[in-house]
Image (cartoon, rainbow, N blue to C red):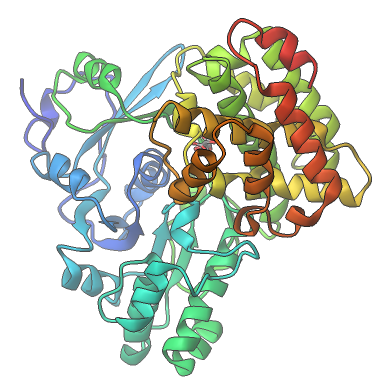
Length: 486
Ligand code: CS2
């Protein structure tokens, strides 16, 4: 089977889109930290779409830890396939990533790229945990990676330490034109990143911190496109559609959105020509997206897993689950959102539920269930806080928190691995109280690093425990009755 490479592009069937600009003569202007499937299916595609307008906007992709992507794409000239899953699937070859570096192995090259004059943008998709924040949304100075980087600023392992090292060098060189763009699912992602970088820099060198404050912008963004992890079915479908072997294709739904705050301290690609929205009010979009899409995704992930459902499609097409999600949205999520001409909450939610019903997408609930301790705060807990302040009901949102706790308990009991930076702590709580779900619930709710001020809120605690008791026996056989009681 011929491998996808620059040389084999001419063999592609005519209906497969491919880079329509000269890959060799386009320079790198963007460094991206964390080139997971989402980046490759989303920001990379937007950037490829405007590359034909010319300029210097190829991407240098930096994996902070894992060498697997670099290895997989090394023999295919860093080309990969993007499969858009819909009634009429669309297949494109993406070539905008010009090089892939691994921080641990290519430290000097990563630094050279991040500090090159022509690098005007650094983008990030490092997931919630990559920001090393505490429950106040500030950099956690006691985080092991941050402690390491403060002690060894020349060999950072965290994205924050790496950014500060690069920014310090750029300051010395007098390179002021750079924008740092967070593309992760966090409210006010740019502001949080800015504060984290500034806090680190203040310890490292206050002059650098001051220069960052005066010179570098960190726009807030909202990113959206459902991107299930690559799987064997995708590899096979790719071969069928392209006739070429690709070791790491990516897939996503047709819908895609990228809203960026209009705040750049240097040049940028004409992303608006590919449909990116530049605005002064990202907050309204990011809040709606996190609470409506990611909030209900997490609800489906935990409740659905307890009912032995596998995918978002399976869960949302189950009557009582879809009824639960409709109630959750109507009663407890949508009332917390601002109305705006550009975003009517009810219509927005309807469109998202429709996207969940895409039968071509096999988005595993187990993938969304990862990192619950990091995802619950931005997706569910902020909404709960707003409802408490406004005297609105919180019981359905608390059912999602309870479902997560039970999900953790069942995983530990079944000796399944939990993917979560707090996995050891959570497993310890469960094993210390093997017979007592309520005690486990209470102890997990005491965890300030997850729940912040809510740990002391009696209404919140009691409601979660009531829902936990109701859910205690849920399985695939009684899902209907159980969900209806929540
Ligand atoms: C999902 C998101 O895995 C998850 O937690 O909720 O990745 C979701 O698919 C994207 O944010 C959609 O834009």
